[in-house]
Image (tube, rainbow, N blue to C red):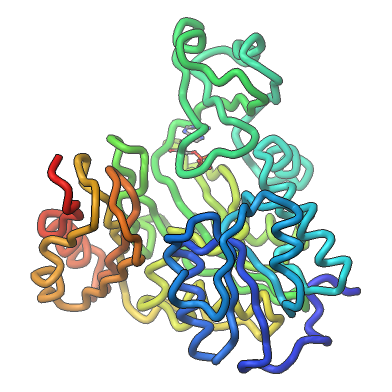
Length: 391
Ligand code: ADP
């Protein structure tokens, strides 16, 4: 069967059964879009408290890495997709072999799950990425000298599984003793992201480049700005690089391409994520077609939507738990925040808050980058996610 072919699918509406592996905020926002098309979405997640649990037609608690659990979940579905890449690709392949439309393809997920295979693929496709070597354990950690960026090949997320080691002593003290990518540290000026969709017919749609601003304390994105403050030539080059990754891979689905702009003005691909991405949340209010609708379109094989921005500028602020927050979440200051113009809140429905846990986000749109930045500063001061339990 043609991978990602739409020929056998029921039409849009309640007879179309779409499954999602992962029921966190990304799945939840996709379900919200799917509801507009009255599509039946069914979700599997390991947590009985998953963000999606009350929003789906069928919620299954199960281990996403368990081949048998994935195969059991997939029975009877028309289409199966993911909101997270750490899933059993063996299970997905068995479902694809049964004729269920699995998007992204299991082999693409397997490639992306392994940062080492990703780096080798970038090299094979001629996509610039930081120089690297692959090693099996800590005894080879000095293979390209120091400082070095050490990345676990498998299982890392949100910066966990990535660390910069300045010296052999630091490597000895806290290096990972596992198969790793060792990468030259890039002298980063900006961290950028480009989201690209490609459907089974080979059509592509690219979103404008966004700029991630990090909170160094917790190594999580603090907020992101669209458009990125880069020249039109760099904007074009970043989009072209993201498209090159998607077309070289013959990827089907939505791919977030993370890039570094170094201080000499060169672009490097860092890594890719085969799904909706934190750096695309602003597209819900900020662009004609949101990344969540676009993901569904690509997965189901529909024509892709318009990626054009609706406003000159947009920012997205992650709402994360305060450093001492535990218990039931309290979103202090949210009512005041909503007094600001063009502010939209999205809470993910998580039943408990933990320090630094992503609990929601706020999007601000505006007439220019400066005014949106001013709103972000105010929102950062106004909104705090605390917990009901005393510290
Ligand atoms: P994850 O997959 O966990 O999100 P990333 O590969 O995106 O991990 O790395 C997390 C962060 O580490 C990046 O956003 C960047 O700030 C930093 N980083 C990663 N690779 C490099 C590198 N080669 N040089 C400098 N900083 C890097």
